[in-house]
Image (cartoon, rainbow, N blue to C red; front, side, top):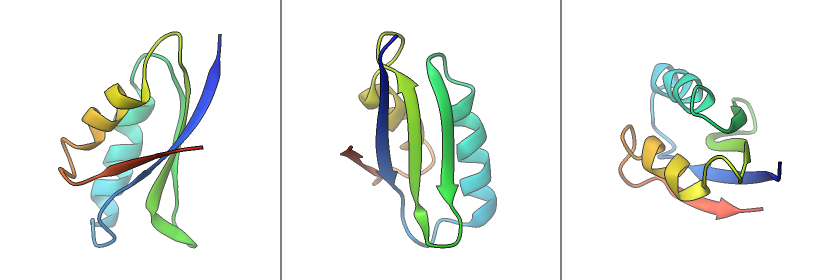
Length: 76
């Protein structure tokens, strides 16, 4: 198991209910260990921890882009 953290930026005006659904959707993906927005400091930044042996950052980004087509990924 190889844990990796990535940060995905979504549009700053993405509604809170869409962000909550997005957190839940990403968390249910195989290999994802956790996903959460910092709702106070950076509400547009989704932190995702995942097992790189089970999934990839690109696969996770594709899931996020189903909600926000212009989401971008930043590796950590």
